[in-house]
Amino acid sequence: MRDFGYFDTASGALEELAALCAQTLARAEVPLAAEVQKNVPVYAMDQLRPHLADPEARRDLMAEWARVLGQGPGVLVLKRAYADTAPIDRATAAYERIIAREKVAGGGGADHFAAAGANDRIWNSLQKLCLEDPEGFALYFGNPVIDAACEAWLGPFYQMTAQVNLVRPGGKAQSAHRDYHLGFQSAEVAARFPAHVHALSPVMTLQGAIAHCDMPIESGPTRLLPFSQRVPGGYMAYRRPEIVAFFNDNAVQLPLQKGDALFFNPALYHAAGENISQDINRMANLVQVSTAFGRAMEAVDRAAMCRALYPVLQGLRASERLDAAGLAAAIGAAAEGYAFPTNLDSDPPVDGLAPETQAALMARALDEGWTAEAFDAALNDQDARRSP
Image (cartoon, rainbow, N blue to C red):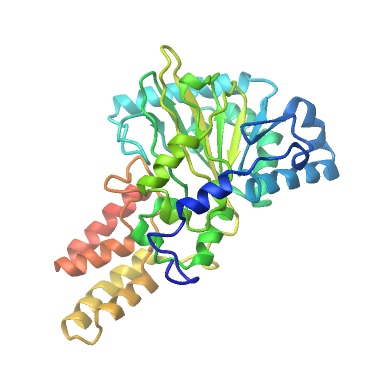
């Protein structure tokens, strides 16, 4: 790290990671947990479910979960988050119908941190389940345990999204990574964000996985590196070979049963495991929950602004009244510079971790000398791909 304001490609040193991961979670630090396995606290929701009906007890439980996710090992397991697994089975049947339809329609696009087509993936499984089976959706997501876990990290008014991942026997492991937001950026892009934004990113989202089947170790449940979320420069580090090797040597896995839920800090180094079983189709609904605060104050029609601005920028560029830095600043003020949210079925991350942004499209059009009409058509195509 060149200074304390920004991270660079050497940030998140192996020695720092190893020291953090050498910790042991003391049982006394998680008094409401039923046990600690491999530094991961396990909560027996059959016993704790009554806590959720009492406001003070619920708050105490959520406070413990928040400490675990933030300053503790960064991950927790909620056993029997679904006391009745009938909603899981009903949702599984709906998801299998959706997968079959999308395969017929030519779906199965790119994936994050794994080869395209390696898994059966349902993008936006939240909306698709709701439209496929509204009652089943209500029974599935009408779960006070899941709600409390989300609120523990994000507070109220959170925004739920979800993606189903179905990994069949022979499915390969993911590469170790951190997750959304900065985890979905290249190292070069992540380095442009100041250090305090690296600290902010993990508290903007919560990662979770709801087990739709029993997941013994041979089926490849998520590999986890407890305490790794506490490495400040980890968004720069996780791709480096020595970090990958340390993860592969030290990551842990816990078996899950149908109806269990796993939640973890998005900055935790993690990766889906390899399914070496003979007959287990490992299905999890991967919930990615966002803070209510990740929104601008005003609604802005940025596409309309881009259309009006593009020919003007062409003229200012040609006359040299705006240099490259000025053009970039003008684009940044007008265009959407972030790839998400989008429709990952039609706008997948084909050449990286994120689709092309509106701002990147505008810059590319200027560099390549597109006409205003060509840029307008490209904007329309991009808008259509991003629509749910």
